[in-house]
Length: 287
Length: 319
Image: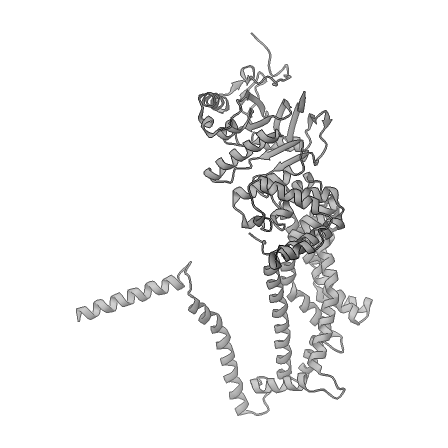
């Protein structure tokens, strides 16, 4: 008996040590635990939703609020794989429309990075723009929506404009900070090596901070799409935001889910591809 | 005769005075090392010669021309951030000549051609690489490779990025990238401060060899006394701890040159611990001891080039 108690104690002690090594502060998880823990919330959520959906559909076959995965897939088929009366594949048409508006905004965001670069290097550009950008950065863009629709009409230009107004100041200000953190020593060194101002600005500083600017862009993706989809939801005839809010009138949660998943996947893809690009192309970064 | 000349130089940042009436003449080919306590303005003095800063009073000239800004004639090696992290070793060494001799666009195109050719050489062999165009930067590339050899790196290191090099190698490349411009003056701000003891010693020998071979004028800031003595042909101590008849307080009065010694040219490591250097070290230690403030009349300015003009209020010769 005593032997058994001792065994039990030592077993408990070992388990406690093992657990604290993983779950204690500064603990390190093993690869298996990492896999389990990272998938756990996703699996739980999916499982919980699916069971609820099936239960509710069983009780009421016309249930709309919690469509089962099958129903969502059917909606996907209707919107992505079959043409509607006009002969359009609606999901892809919407993705394309939103994507185009997003692409049109990109040159302006690059310009924002350039503005930030100059703000960080030239005092007068900073004097000229810092105050106004800081103020504009704080305007809630949704409120501007009305104004922009009045001024620029309700077409694509207005939607691109709302994206630009939302994130231009953020990107410019963040780029300025990154530029300022670029070591002054390297700028001085470039000057002693006979580089001109333009060469230092674009070939030394901008080339070095560009991957960091890409990270800034990555983190503003959500704001970009928030602005774009909100604008589409208010006034549009095509686009992810438009369709989602259109079908919401018929409580078509299945279609909404299709669009939510599509948009999420698109954003994740953009985000990850930028991350991979930076990792491959700029292997000297942060070393 | 004098190459670098500082006359009555005062420097202050706002109300904080840093340099107080510095007079200094340095002849061509001199390896001047400069030591002093933290915050004495060693780096400030270096920046004044570099031209990234202007003195509030006094003048800095090089070969009689006043220093008004950063110039390609003065090369710099910092302790950190000596290399452009986004450029390879070869590109780092080529940076100066390329930007001096080629336009913005020409430089970009030339670099792209080199990258292409070197990439092809790496993947497809030298013979394929030789078929590709040499590009407008070929002469500079050859020159950079020569410098690469000179600092003891091989052509295999040419394509590496700075983060792939050890600290010592990085500083060698930094020195090469400054040296390829053949500047009139080399300024070094604690270039070996971040290196471990053995690497540091190797780098010291390396810089000595360079100096002996090419007789560059070097202005070398360090906080390590032994390094200053071993490397220099002249050692200068700068300190804010001294007494004048004005009764200034350290920190408000600004630094002065309190010692200035000629040094025997050393070449072997044995001389690093020779009795002569030991004696000078002892003297410098005493001079730099902040608790025993040296009187302005008792500074050890024994170097033949040493001179100073003094403020009558600071030194009323009572005796």
